[in-house]
Image (cartoon, rainbow, N blue to C red; front, side, top):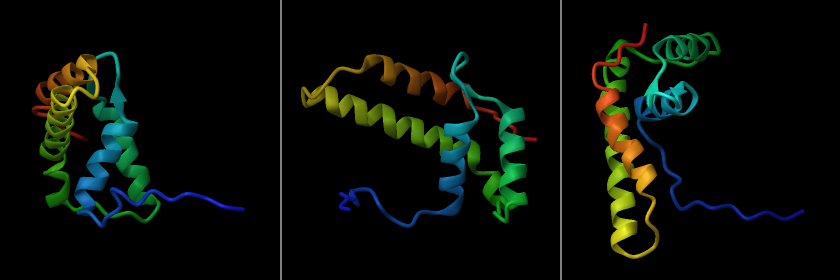
Length: 108
């Protein structure tokens, strides 16, 4: 058996960054380009039940971290467009819209 491992973006990150990313990935309401706060609360409850930790200070950063990730993705797409790699304007627009819709997110 053989495999190829891509370590390009492999790194140890701040736990809150990883949890916020997981909440965005698994609790997103695609139709509203937002996070479903009820799903997010259930996700975090299960995460902690399984032994994970999310302190109050970390939880307080989730909205900002998700918005920062959306900004990063939007800027990355603009760079791709500038370099002539592709023009995924739909993905760009989704990320810009999500930055606004995540503002004030409260997870139960």
